[in-house]
Length: 395
Image (cartoon, rainbow, N blue to C red):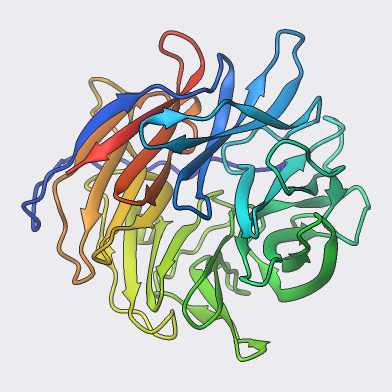
């Protein structure tokens, strides 16, 4: 949301370790159709299993558009525009998304901030049955007042509709902020809205996935004592479960870290990776479940030094977690690194691959996708000009 703050900084050295899995990944950068001035990349998988890359792109007149392209083998489709000349919220945590909802339908969501002097943020959705023509954008929330609605994520429900999860701050971030769910139709209309948790951390992204048994949402909770740990809630057999703590990190913080969890599912197998600064040790962890998120094992450490978070996760074919995150470099370089590693479901950690380095602002929020037999990553750069970079992670 608008008053997002950076994660607190802690002084720990960066130590790259190689442990556990012998399998090593290499990175091949690959061209993509995004233009100069592109930012906020995101991935999804189409119905035929192809990776779909979406992004925000700047035009010469200073306006911005939401665009996407699909990768078939090593060939990209032409870049297509969903909406143009909109007031997109261009913060790394407020990433637009385009998903396949079934039956050839694509659904898109994004956040807009129409007035810079206002705290107002709005979630918009749009639909397309052919990938070319998109429905008129519709505000996803029932509430249209000038307050914060944002940090959204979306997943197909399996019946032609989708579930959009987001946060709503009706009375500002200092008052209770609610975790919301909106059901979106194949025509891009908001059909149903419900409150899932009435008091959550105000500035951390949500992550919604579909397991073999139903929906699961990972988000950062908030207690009366100021503890901001990751929680999950599941929709099974027609109702939502009570929020459950993923792991008792006990991170007490009098601020919002703008840094949460990334979840992925393949049938009953679920993995959630997240950032925490608990115990003055900023780190990224991952936990696995073999029962659609009903229970999780003990977390495995992902990061190797002073993590900044902004974690993205996808599942490999064998159930391993493929994870990217940002981490502080050495004092000599003062750079931020995009790192990647594979963590097996038993917690065994593979070697760390350094994808790129730069400033936290230029790198943005790197995103991972596993589609078919390929794993791809996208991130930002200012070398030589601001543009999204994509790479193929090869075993």
